[in-house]
Image 1 (cartoon, helix red, strand yellow):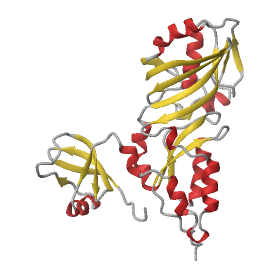
Image 2 (cartoon, one colour):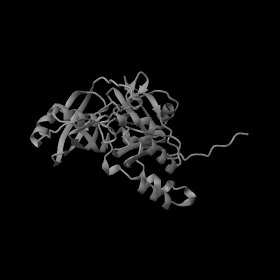
Image 3 (cartoon, helix red, strand yellow):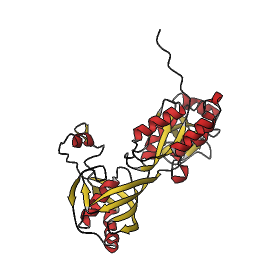
Image 4 (tube, helix red, strand yellow):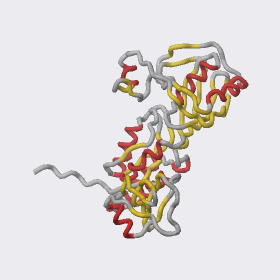
Length: 314
């Protein structure tokens, strides 16, 4: 007779972690899974180990909404050290080039428009980009020459926050999916006829989530330890979660009746009738009595489910 697996908690929602320094995003997810004693979890957008800040972690049925968060805008605050370029474009790497030049504040501000809008960016050699099926950082660590192609990215805003001293400047960037802040620092340094790399990086916004939503590991652990033992800590910990549908803030919502709910639960399409029926086409989500039921497409007066949610026990 095989060993019975321990039953995991039925937890659904978003945990917006303030990821600490020197921790991988994968490690952070595993810690959250242990704290909540749940088996299904994933993150929406990797943060480098040396970066801190906002890491959205989806638990349970929230994992079905991860793509909508990953496609959202992100805001980073980062500090650049001038005069040195590293092979990782941050403090983790080896110095590969130096410059005695230091940019003035006026020169920096004049350069920023060149790095806004849709631009071409070569990702760092040490990145998760796949090259012939292998991660670029694995190839780079093995000493292989990694040539990554430039690709289009969108930087909505790039501001100079502070000139700390002649060697150091702080920036804030609001950017789209696929942008590497380390590469911004590298390319900005080259543009300014010097060299540069990131010495500090913090993410403050991802999609619908911002700093006000964040919670630290220390606070989570305190909540877990203070929860009633006979409830496994779930009562207090649930207060740290945001609803699954928080990830869908920019998507239209449809309120449906009980019969339509049953059809959607079976994966069947429903007709959208009545004067309140939506006239648009595209993606939407359906709710019944305020509860998320399905995510799908509206077309020709019909809603076809693509993802059905089972939030029993929430």
